[in-house]
Image 1 (cartoon, chains in turn blue, yellow):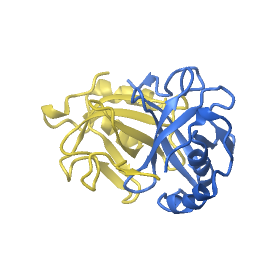
Image 2 (cartoon, rainbow over the protein chains, first blue to last red):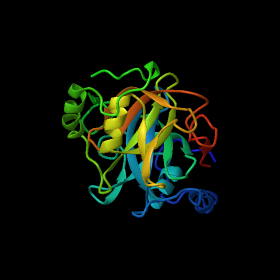
Image 3 (cartoon, rainbow over the protein chains, first blue to last red):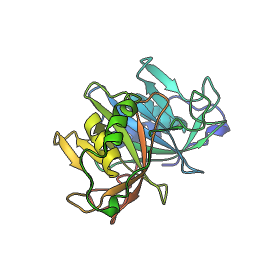
Image 4 (cartoon, rainbow over the protein chains, first blue to last red):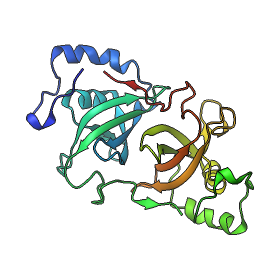
Length: 130
Length: 130
């Protein structure tokens, strides 16, 4: 499967039928937690910096795969959160990996704009402990 | 605060008194979840590869800071899991950052041995989705 180029314009929320059929099999590899979520580590594909950790439901992971942009489930707002819709700082998906337990995702992205953090920082991990 | 060089021999489980006193203040920056855990992204400080995601309690985060080696809470075994004690593949801490919400850690490490994954793979994220 290749990811759509998110810069090429609006994408369908459902994707093509072949993509839609493929997702249940793909999602079967992933273990969602009791809240129906899986943590997704977001890494800049260009700089290798870790930008943030977000959470995805089966629905928002499907949307991420379909649209080629990261879509999360906001635990604080309890709603779908398509990264960049407000800030413009969207994340274009370059690859998606999952770990040995199938309960964590690693998504490498092209980070658009100044960065990933709502504070204006490039990475959410801008504070050192100690 | 500087991390001890874990290669320099055994460390005290309690650290020096100044370190022990410093931890409550440091840990106050971190939001642990309802299970008392915080996810920790482990990144290879040399290659920038993301190796794994583990979970730390306040106790194992303190142990990590004190000992300069990653110590996790194993959710499956419900016990403290000092990385490398069985495999030899310990992780020596180079830096610890926390995110804008204070609910995720990013720990950059020197990965000892062949890698981080119990399967023998270098990174736990060795499988691509799609």
